[in-house]
Structure formats: C-alpha cells, structure tokens
Length: 66
Image (cartoon, rainbow, N blue to C red; front, side, top):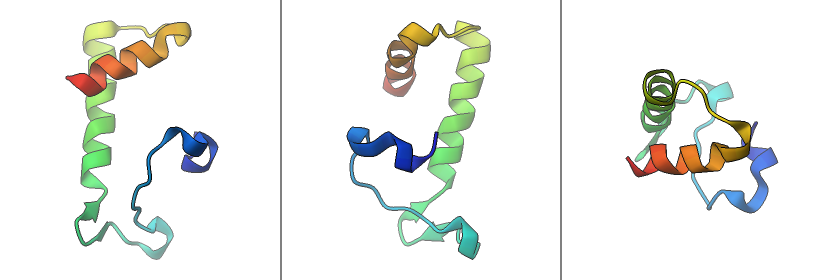
C-alpha cells in the first residue's frame, strides 16, 4: 500500500525523494521509518506469530504504542 492509497488516514508529513537518491532532507530521513518497519516485523514474528486481518488495526495500535 503506497502513501497515495492511504488518503486522509495519514497526517501531513514530509518525504524524501528516493528516485533522486535522496535519503535525508534536513530533519527528515528514512532511518526512523525503516527502523519502525523492522521492529514491526520482529514483533509479529516474535510476539504475535500471526495477525488476524480483521483485527490488524488493534495489533498496529499495540505495536505503535510500545
């Protein structure tokens, strides 16, 4: 799911341009997003093992809270 398909579900945010081989622009960088995505993958495989599609929002809220 790309950022364009999320619509208004995501608050206003800054972005870097990967096609221009940009990984940082001032305080905006990709390390936080990549680190969070890695943490989610490790949490799913380590703590939850399986995520029910009907309750995915609850799992994501729990992971984001921690």
